[in-house]
Length: 489
Image (cartoon, rainbow, N blue to C red; front, side, top):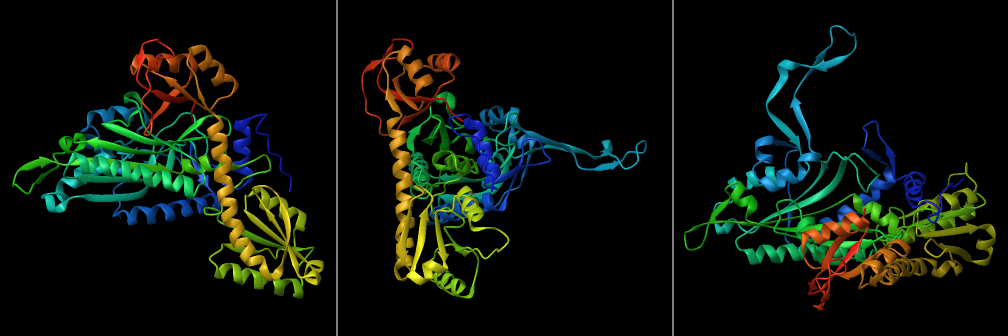
């Protein structure tokens, strides 16, 4: 199997696209800017979805589904939200095509089928959901309302990259309503912590929890909290966001409730979401020049057994016994009996696809009552007794999961650099990359000036940020704390 992967050091962008293609994660589609998620890529998303769904339900949330189309008047109801997404909206204006009488076989829009009101293809669902919540919420007994939906959204991007930025993508979006500001803020932080837990314990991707600056907030939010991760090329990735919406949407859609004192009040809101962008983050956090590297907890296939050089009654019997024992332990495993491919080809193929553990069994191994176990993260191989291989592999999968996290965290920590001058700032950004911890005077003007000069943005103000008096690296004005800057996806 020819690898043909561009080395990361040569062209990181080309390397990423090669991984997506060669590991069979996604293809380009007939629709510009959209992707076809292939079975392997979709299986990773299913594992992400299933884990997150359990975590959401464990915190009291339930799933629902809302329409793909949003009447334009509803979309316009919350002004900041509408303005924030206006340039990315796809809009449906007609509901029918008809045959073109001048060109046989061609279709044209039927001008008689113009919609009375144009429909926005949802870029986010606050408008349609809060219009619905007006009917669902009457009393304090109806609160809190904790709803999540798994859906697709459309944001018309001009420059796209599979998983990281596409015109259509899959995601989940939580939308909750609360009686008080305090409850809503607690929910916002709770869900941020759920995302951080998932990123670190399932994706093995260390993240920094923080709050966005005013200019980086979600359109229509009072505060946006985020988790930020660092990719191997030194760029940051916003991996998830949780928004405190205040009463903005409640007021826009007149969502009120009768409190226990029999008084009408507007409810308080949150929204939060992650998307298939996480798969891009997974690729760029762990993979190498030989292909995809996957943390075992999200790998569609955790263990593959490969016979050498071919199948046979004795090898089949041993391999199937190991396979059954692995499956009984909850391991996603496969015995590859395809005799049209050589074992060396299979080794390269499973390495490319990021399968965490490979077990090789040949007749000589059977004679010695051993098997060879190879781990994808370090490429180390170990000869293990057949009698103990299942227990060894179960433990090895946990070791690989932890090793991937430790490796990524070490890289991240080594690429957080404190700077005190703008010259240092620019030098670190160009030579080392990563997160730059620097003082900022708190003004959007300075934030924008730094972005214009360097393409670096404030990724977040960390939640555990120490208060430290200093001077802004750009303006020289007083600053009460450092913030994290980086170039980002």
